[in-house]
Image (cartoon, rainbow over all chains, first blue to last red; front, side, top):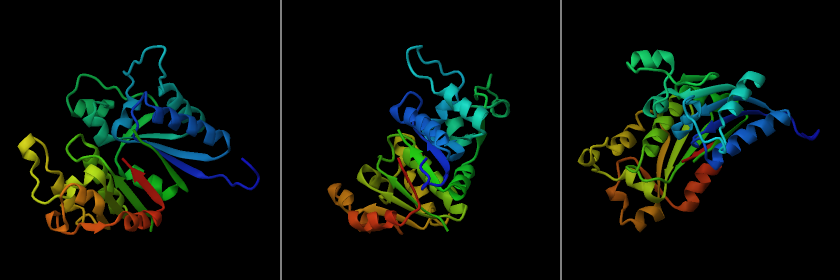
Length: 136
Length: 118
């Protein structure tokens, strides 16, 4: 970051499915923004973006798997990884509570992610200086 | 108050895109944001009056559009050129939907601090 620039509070909205160009751009943007000294408060996963939180997703070894990258953001930088609960249920991504509530045989929400409502997106747009959207 | 613009292109019955974005519009409005929804290209089919999703075993997206006002969504705007290209006119639309030219709705979105698109 140049001296003229001040740190920005950022939030990301990821609607791009895992494996897509836009998803890769989102992760690389997040890494670059943090490296440049900006604050990334929250990543909100919506629509097909909720697939990023599916721990059972198993791409071939020669294809990119974004999951470890997202989890590193949470672990190393305290970035909140929030997954829209309605979009997640619709696409079969459940935490333990929802799996029990919906009487499903297992949960598959990856560590570091949290299911919550669209209100978290609204809050992110209010708190962040910039919301950057990565669609599919 | 944050002004949020939502720009939708996709047809309403191809997938869940329009429904999910309209859900987001309602929640953002409920959180006090001034939300403008702009529908262009095939998304304008979502604002056609008298649509019936049950014919194809689906929910009726138009009911969701009609409910936006109740959730304090500031404006629902249909692109004039997209409507005329599909043989639709203002009289074919759900009550409350505004018809604006490309230039007019671009001005609306230019004033938004948050811009989301499908």
